[in-house]
Length: 150
Image: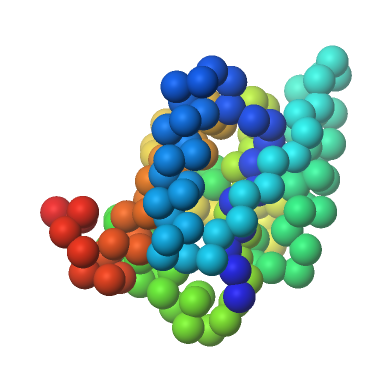
């Protein structure tokens, strides 16, 4: 059983990249975590980019449960999210959290699994990845009853 974060592209800018890497490393202390960065699609129209990037993300998911991160998704507070993470771990379920690129995710990926709202706003995809990494870390501290979550 493992958790994956599948995202489009690498973070631009060293400070943001370092912060994302820090939280992903922290989260990996609590959960078996793998990060997969798929190549960005450039030079095409938005719909075509979205479809191509979604296809690459879908391939990265394999047969795991897909949790698409999208502003139209279900909002969970940190404690229920931690409980859900623990439930997936106990069920030995592979789960892939998917963060789309600058044009978001194709609706086809949003339909089959769970869609999770990281914020009620539209976020830059790099910031969405940071928020997800921090919440994965926070969920681990909640499950272990460590003092990070106050």
